[in-house]
Amino acid sequence: MSTVRPKGVSRRELGLSARQLALEAEYQAFAMQEVAPLAEQIDRTEEIPRPLVDRLASAGMLRGAAFDEPPDPIAHGLRHEALAYASASVEGLVNVHLMVTEALERWGTALQRRRWVPELATGARLAALAITEPEVGSDASSVRTRARAAGRGYVLDGRKKWITCGQIADVFLVLARCEEGPATFLVPRDAPGLRIEPIRGLLGCRGYMLAELHLDSCAVPADHLLGAVGAGFSHVATTALCAGRVNLAWACVGVGQACLDAALRHAGERRQFGHAIEDFELVQRILTRMIARIDAAFLLCLRASHERASGGAAAASMEAAIAKYFASTTLTRVASDALQLHGALGCSAEVPLQRYFRDAKIMELIEGTTQILETMIARQASSRARVASALGACAGNGREQSASL
Ligand SMILES: Cc1cc2nc3c(=O)[nH]c(=O)nc-3n(C[C@H](O)[C@H](O)[C@H](O)COP(=O)(O)OP(=O)(O)OC[C@H]3O[C@@H](n4cnc5c(N)ncnc54)[C@H](O)[C@@H]3O)c2cc1C
Image 1 (cartoon, helix red, strand yellow):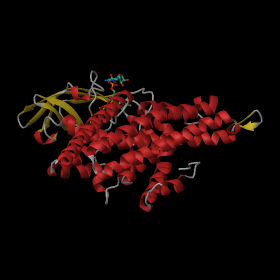
Image 2: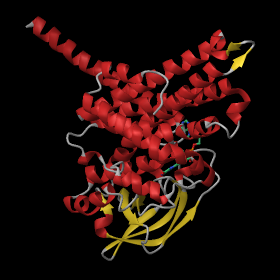
Image 3: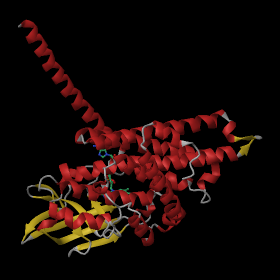
Image 4: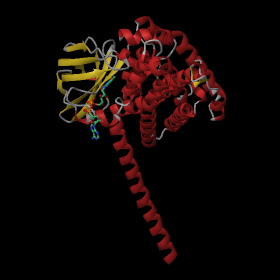
């Protein structure tokens, strides 16, 4: 990754271990050699070539956290940053695949984990997550797809829309509603009653290979239910979404860094009024704003990954939401700034600025829109404040009592 700023030194100072820095270099080398040369083609054709998926698999990019020894969420984040620096579309494929893997690792029975996880880790099967429906987006707990017990399994009826990798995934983690509550099911691509319709012509992340799923009396065996009936949204889907948010936040840092590197290079080379444009104070202000925003997003990603490493699920979900919220909203500004600094050239196909700009907007819509995260973060903070003040009152009462004894 030919970053303009000397990132290595500051990252070491921030506490990245020698192993993490070595892995980062490995991920960056892979992304720049294998992914970056195909990024424009992927954007143009709206397809990730199968040989690239195979190379991602053989390089271990599709392996979930359970295969790390020791598990290292920061190294995982660095992987998403490096991939997104080269292509946000390719990072998206890896992200949804790992979101499903993580849900399986966390909620699968021993038998389910043995059956599915190794195949996902080697890329023998690709996974996708199917929550959204034509009528249900942000309000994901209200999905209308129905699942009912029938014979030795379940039958699903409904539609899922905007499913990343829907065109090529081998198995879908589908959120549906049973009579007793939400439940998630592993639905193989060849399940009877599943029809897949590609969606093309997206604004950005055009290699996501989106699809709409039509589930018409789609039958799956009983052991394809993942987690308990009733826990499909609150536990299984939430595990996947929390993992996806952290990965996506790191991806935003990757795209943001690509924007910044392009902007710094261009500002040094482009001359107007007899000067390189980097000499103009208004240009310096834009560059400074970009640098500060990306650095801040990077630090929030580090914190969110630290939180995941320390295992505090509630805190991890809050830190993941904050990191994704800040990194994605920041990225839309950074991408816009980078394009602005390129002038007309930024709007052309000669440089990847318009791809970054289009991809950036998508990041604000997926894994929780900006508005949903704003609501969620404020609500969680208010509830924490209430608990803290209740605990404070208890402690205060205790002090008064002991004082009166
Ligand atoms: C490229 C792409 C890839 C995707 N991949 C997947 C995937 O793999 N799997 C999957 O299941 N889904 C996927 N989605 C769907 C995505 O998760 C949804 O688009 C997202 O949840 C928002 O839902 P919606 O589009 O229906 O918007 P809506 O929920 O209809 O929201 C419309 C607008 O209203 C706002 N809004 C809604 N509710 C509130 C509220 N309570 N308060 C304030 N504002 C609110 C939203 O922020 C938004 O601005 C993908 C979408 C895109 C664009």
